[in-house]
Image (tube, rainbow over all chains, first blue to last red; front, side, top):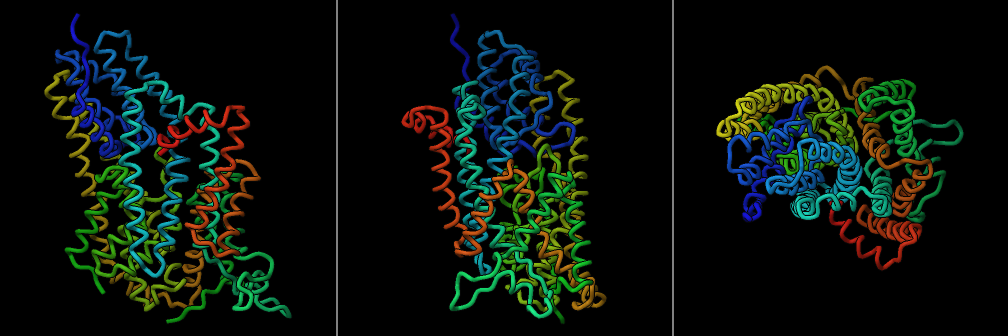
Length: 283
Length: 286
């Protein structure tokens, strides 16, 4: 019996980097990450098959539509490298099997990656980076560049290798019910940090003066040297109100973010005209 | 202050790298160079004023802290926000004679950045549409069934040809707008006085816009009404107790740990086995 065909580390390395770099470089609305995928599978197919016709046929498998969260998506690429090896060794795996797995994974992994990587991890890192940028310090930007890229450098490679080694069970660990506890905990961190970001990095103030009471800003919350925690109704209440308003418009009224921005332009104009907002500037 | 040809060309190059879909790749291009905070550093270095760059970048970053593009649906274009919005904001802040550290400078930057970013979605669709041409070349190569052709063309299609689209839709717009920026800022100063309704509205919009960015993120993480309490907890930590974001994140991690233990207990799994598999999962989530 002939030796089992196996991709070399160097080839998988090449395939990984092609994906890590080129997953979206040739993006179109019609075929989002398809060409990134083809470019990543090309060295694998080239090594596994001897006959040119076989190579063409094997690569054609990956010409169907593909799109997912690209960082986490490394796992799917690694997984199909494993499948392609098995197929080259004569296992009964056809195009439909491979594409069924790819199609079945890209949705759940996109949801998971968008909420945990893009929706939670990046805002936390950026939030910390923003905190380090006070006064124009480059420290925050450097922190983000180093930490984000280090996490992705190891994380994406890890996902690719796990997909290759473990096959289907790697996916189970990620999207199975048992990962829920971890996911909900990570999202919890994200929610709290975003709350802190909302309090730190938005500053909405009103110029309204209530007759006989004084400035509305001071009624909402005041702090002083002797009262560092402050007193009033709730600090930065307007930040909270506007975040909730925007969220409500987007989720309950299904209004797009761009439309919400335009609505805010209207709110600002009316607010300025009635004297609720006044930045108080002059040349 | 004006932007030289060389500086504008550098900004244009970074716009090519940082877009979504950009030539710097997703991780380093879009998610690193494309973030306004990082862009603030890059633009600051190019224009020779790092601290104003960072301040402006940070102000715009808050608006786009949660720029999620589910299924490629964009509400703002990062190359426009970062490499057109930040240079224009720096010019405008200097042109208006504002203190870069002031809340007004931040509002101006946020408003300008958001306006440019929204208009910039045109550039996103432009690049993606031009890519259809390269993909067409790729499909032709696949159809020939000739392995040598395929092996040569696919990498070219994915890594090289898209540069053409970026020269058209990233480099040229960034270059032209940045070159014209100082005149535009002067015109703005002449025709729109600071105490007029238009400028007051612009600054007010700038202070309201970050709320949209935060709200987009809340859309991702708030799935039930009680999640607002979690949000309010973080909000209160920063607003009342004056915790900075690192301190808030540490407190958040502690509560998340408690939550994790409770959730695990709900599954009725022994804690030891849970933590053993838990470590693996954590790595993969990155």
